[in-house]
Image (cartoon, rainbow, N blue to C red):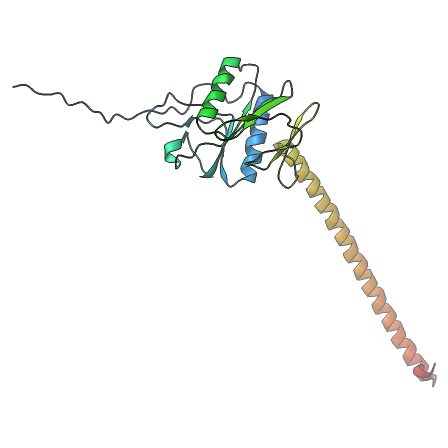
Length: 240
């Protein structure tokens, strides 16, 4: 009697969540990744992530990239170990940022660009903080290169870029610029100092009001005593 071996075709496919590489190669690159990620996260109601694997094709874990920052418009905020597109209503991240470091190579960046263009990214931004250079593309079916970043406004995010002679500045739709944690802390300290100064001024005004009220009360008492004295002298105060 022969038997046929049962083959399990329902093997679980492993989608790795890390590749052993650090999120950033240096502090400057890390600071820019955090600045953009946190700035967008505070601005949008959508899913924003930094340095997690994006798997666009179910069943093929070899097709993967880990953008420095990506924005999946239409997907809710929340923690994810990776972005599996088929579990996200098949919505691809539509905006991607890459922050260059000395470790990035031209073939690596070329492969990333092809990946993002193929799998649905509509805005792709690359910034080199060491050289203060930036380039990018936008579009759906066919990308167009962004010629000038001075005053460029993201069609999807409505944020504005200013590339000065020595720095990149990103502005929110309300005109406020993206701030680092250090800058936010400084701003909070300044606001706290201003609040303390306003509190001191309010206390001084309250003391002045109390003094004025006391002086008014004293004058009123003096006036009453004067009326009494005039009447004692037989003088009608209303006729004076």
